[in-house]
Image 1 (cartoon, rainbow over the protein chains, first blue to last red):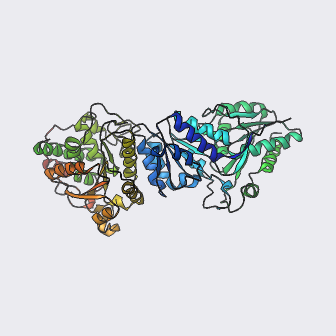
Image 2 (image 1 turned 60 degrees about the vertical axis):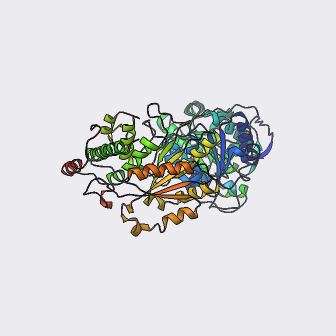
Image 3 (image 1 turned 180 degrees about the vertical axis):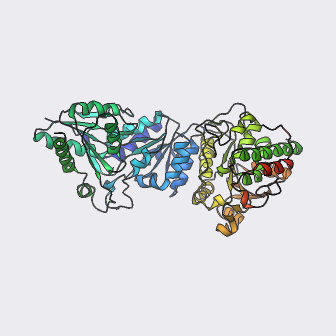
Length: 318
Length: 280
C-alpha cells in the first residue's frame, strides 16, 4: 500500500523565497537580482533582511542577466528572479554568452513555469525552457518537485560553482519531501520502489505521478517512481538501474514533449537499454487561460494521463 | 607614461593587428585600428591592473570589458604587449585550439579576459554588475567599457544606461568608438543614433568627448573621467575615431570592418607602421 505522508500544502516559489533568505544568512556572497517581480518570486524576505544585497533591476531582464554575470567578478553569487518565460526565452542570448559560455556562477531562478501559472495564459506559460537551458553547455538544470525540495535546492546551488537554471512554479501543491532531506544535485530520488513500470517525473508531475501510482496499485501494477529533479546532469545510473528491473518507462513533466526530461531519458535508453517509453507532456501546443488544474487536464499532464501512459507502455513491453 | 612611448606602443599594436588578421584572412582590422590609441592609453597609462598575475576576481584592480568583441585583435595585442601573455601567441589568433578565439572568450582561459563578448550590447550590463560587486566589496577600483557606435542600436545598452544613472553607479567609465561606420555602411544611413551626446545626457550620464587619435587628449580625458568618478553619476566618453586609422587605404571606410588585407596589401600597410617593439 503506497503511503506518502503529506506534510502540508504550499507553492514551490515560496520554497525558493525561504531558501533564498536562508542561503543569504549562510553565505554572505549571495546577492539577489529581480526584474520587478519581487512579490511574485517571494524575494521580499531576502530584500527585507539584506537590502544592500538586493538589486531591483526593473523590467529589463537582459540587463539583469548581464549584470548578474558581471557581479561574479569579485566573488558574488547572484540569484536572478523573474518568471520562467522572461528568465529564458527573452534572454537566451545573454545567458548563452555572458553566463553559460563565460561559465559564470549565476543562478537563474525561474518561477511561474509551465501551464500552472494559470489564468495569465500562453504568453506567460513557457513550456520550452527546460529544452533551451539543457542545450546550453555548462548549464545545470534543476526542477524540484515541492516546497521543501525547492527550498533545499535553492540552498544547495550556492555551493555548486556553475551556472544553474532552477525552475519552480506558482500553484499550491502537496509537500511530501522531508524538511531535513539532503538535496544532491544530479542524484535522483527514488520515491517508490516497484517492478512493473518506471515513472520518471520532475516538478509538479512528481505529485501527479504519486497519485497515478496509487491508481495503478489498485489495479495490481507495481510502480517505481523516480523524482528526476536534476535534468542536467542526468542521473543515468538511476534510470538504467530501474529499467533493468521494470523494462519500461513513462516520463512525466510540465513541459513540451519536444526537448524536455523525456527526451533526455530517451537518449539514455536508446544508447544503453532500449525499452519502451511513453511521454506525458504537452504535445507541441501553446497553453491558454484557465485554472492550473483545468489546464493540466486539458493539456494531458494530469494524473489520468500518467496512468494511461503506464498502462500503454506496459502493454508495449509484451 | 610618456606620450612618445605610448605612440611607439600603438604603432606596434597596429602592426600586430594587420599581421594577425592577414595571417588567417579573417577578423576585424578597421575598428581595431581605430581603437588602438585608446586601448594603448587605457592599459599603459590609465588603468590600475596587474598583467603578470591575472586574477578573474580583480580585487583592488580596475576592470575592462570590450563590449564590441569583434575588435579582438587590438585587445589581444594590447594585452600581450602589456604582459598578460607572450606576444608570440598573437600568431595563433583564430586558429584551432587557440586561446585567442575570433571573439574574446573565457573558456580557454586567456589571461586578461573576464567575459565573452561578440554578441553585441552585453558589456555595459556586465560592467554594471562588476561595479556593484566592487561597491559591496568596498573596492574603489574603476570599471571601464568600450562599445561600438553601431552597437548602441542594441536595446540592452539602453536598459543598462537607465539602470546606471537611476542607481548612481559612479565607478564606471564607458567609451564609445564613434567612427560612424558599421558593416552595412554609415551608421547615419543604417540606423541613425541622432544626437548621441544628448541621448546619454538624457539618460543621466556625464558625457565627455575626445579625439580618439590624440594620445595627449586621451590621457587627459581619461584622467578627467577618473577624477569625476564617485560623484553619483556614470561617465560616458564619446570618442571620435576613424575606422582603419594608421593605414591609408583602410582609413575612413566601412569596407575594412571585417575584411583582412592580402599579402600585397599587408606589405603596403606595414610600410606605414613603424616596428617599435619587435614583431611577434
